[in-house]
Image (cartoon, rainbow, N blue to C red; front, side, top):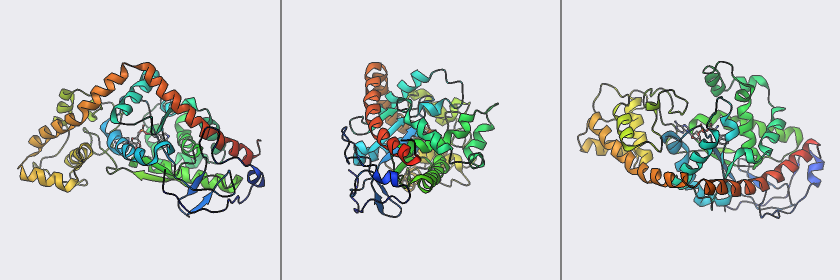
Length: 381
Ligand code: TYM
């Protein structure tokens, strides 16, 4: 379990109903709903007078297709490290409700299975972390509604991802605009303190912090403040347009390498990756975003740091084209076993649904406790 922290008496700043609402620290399902506010080092337990604090980790990924190496480098690699430390205090959600904000989502069921297979193939261990499908825990949308009543429309409209996404669709849905509130609910429902995500999620994590502050102020202090846990590589860029991030929604499939791409496709995509007219392999993200992106991809696929990669390439007297060819081999070496395992998992649908079902039960047990508190604080029970 996470680092034990100081023990403080429970405090409920505002709502007396909440203070009376006591439950044993460990529920009948063996799950604690305690948390620690990591920023001010004060611990609050909604459940007992005194409690041990713990961190809880939450992250999510949309089932909108096979994950790409941006998802891998920006999030999955980080999850693999954190799962060993936080185990069942770590939740990973396949956020299907988020994935329908931009219709049509015709392959949703298959995408959920494929994503689950890919995560398991990457090494996510359902015996350690709680891996579950978001819509199987209905409290996500329940809490999102409560939070939406604390969030102004202009606040949502100022978010960069909303501006970017609404420009790409003809009639953006209400769901697309309120999506960040659902994301805040995902995190808060488990009183999560750590959120490992890529750089593109920064504003959503800030909104989550705003909403937990707003809830605590309005209804009673029950939510901790969460912190973003960035990966070592903050952002993998598009191979075709290094000015923007690698994304599943970019129309050109050559802009991204998906985890299940064939070795030939990987080689072709890397060969065609946009670089510049300088032939040396140097790292300079501002002036040479294309080649710097390749170096970052290299770092993601190996344990090497940027400096060592650049030096190695210098010692080999490589130019961009020969470096690209070697990089393709490195990527394929990393992805081949993932691809093989994913194909095996994909053949066993029943097992994949079982994994998600077990995860949903565990997630539900925590979510239930939080929602009971929320309803009590708001005055609904
Ligand atoms: P999603 O599905 O777009 O991406 C999943 C994770 O991959 C990271 N990522 C990247 N990292 C680096 N470079 C890239 N090019 C790149 N593309 C994607 C994302 O930062 C993310 O960590 N809104 C979220 C899903 C979500 C969520 C949550 C995350 C819903 N609720 C609660 C954390 C906590 C999203 O669309 O991720």
